[in-house]
Image (cartoon, rainbow, N blue to C red; front, side):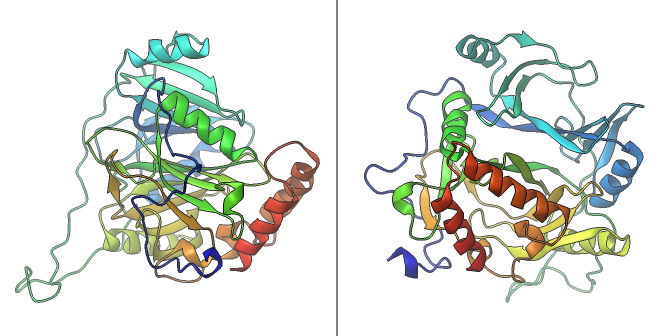
Amino acid sequence: MDEHHDVHTGLHSEHGGQPGEHPGRARNPVIKVADLAWLEFEKPDLAKAERFAHAFGFVTALRTTGELHLRGSDPTAPCVVIRHGPRERFLGPAFRAAEATDLRRLATATGREVTRPPDTIGGRMVELPDPSGLRVRVVADPHPLSALPAQPAHTFNFGHDPHRINATQRPPREPATVQRLGHLVLQSTSHRQTLDWYLEYLGMIVSDFLYFPGQRERGPTMSFIRCDRGGEPADHHTLALTLGPSNRYVHSAYQVADLDALAAGGQYLREHGYRHSWGIGRHIQGSQIFDYWRDPGGFMVEHFSDGDLFDNTLEPGWAPMSASGLSQWGPAVTQDFLGMRPGRESLRELRSVLTALREDNEFNLNRLLGLLKVARS
């Protein structure tokens, strides 16, 4: 039956799991994080990174010889912290604790200490590795940032209920205004172990599971997980984890006001010579309108708008993974987005496949065949 599953129907099932399958949440998590706080990168050229950031829609919150903080218009911590270093690399995410007292609870459970981030950020934090070795920080009380002017919302004449009379619609072709950091996607060779770690220690819960076609009995291979804020709705996914031949950053996503902001901002990026990856379209899991770009270092970043919000009552949906199932509408998914574009990225991933198949992890030959089937679908 799964082989003929139509990914464009039943986009989310409140009770999609079968007996014995992963429940999508831990029974008694150590803490429950409230959101992503920021992402940290290392780059050799901060000036080039800042130029792209401004074209993408960030505002510089701090710039020193060794550090660059990029923010959106929302009154939160910086979305991105970039440190000067010898090469392009993702350093890890920081999550915001729901309560400052959660840091002590997390430190005790993991044998870590509560420490202080750099003075440029402030607050307190616990730093620990996830099962893939990625550095994860959980933070509380960083230096506050005041709100910036938001991109004005448009007035639409949709259907038979017009609101714009004797006025035109002329969205300027300018950078979209990033509002906030939305989510992070990571690839891991140990999907189940990494997923369980985030559920157990950070209290996150699964919104949707995907599995390789014909391999549901082997368990999920992608998990879209959200913060558990009880009755307060949270983004469909704050973190997404996917099984693959290497442990790596896949992409991060930043919210903008609406489709016009996303499209006009994309046109601005295109005119300034930046590399488009995929879009514009609308996702299935999460429902976001999306548009993907590559920064000068090759990292994939996403503009998104109009995403789903779930409270903690919704159980995980289950669906087979497919390339065509990545969007409800939009252009066909690109080789660049799938990591198959000829070049350094695809060669690096091929080498990772050969390495992973020789090691003891979840990415075995059956999983490779499943992944190839996804890419052809």
